[in-house]
Length: 180
Image 1 (tube, rainbow, N blue to C red):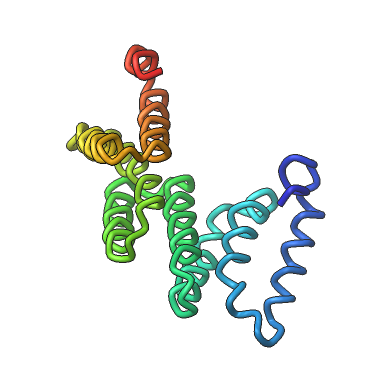
Image 2: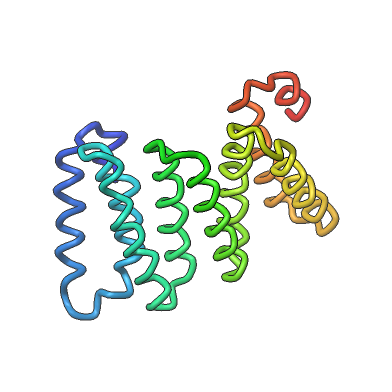
């Protein structure tokens, strides 16, 4: 991962990713598969291959994570897959359906951290489509109220960062400054 990004050696990082995948073929390594797929597909392969090629492996990582009981790792793969589909330019109506399906899964699996990460993407897609532009704001405001009342400082900070990210994305500078 470090070779690909900070050290500027994506081809060497790709070779390390491939080596990690070979190690997974050894007996007893299935429990590491979901995490390894997430790391290699989200931090290594996109430097040298089209992002489209990460979609199927991330789905496999999600499925293996569920099978092995590593729900958080499965959901990392699901989130990576959802974001990659957005980044490759999947049509927004199709993207919205994908996000809504992911939200349903994350809710059922009680993955609150991953849920907060996808809310910004959901709000972005809805805003770009011109529908329910306040939906993300309402959800984030509700999360912020809950976090504040329970004294969850980490969640308060996370929600505020998510709100700031959305303001900047849509160039709502006054709201961003007011938040800071």
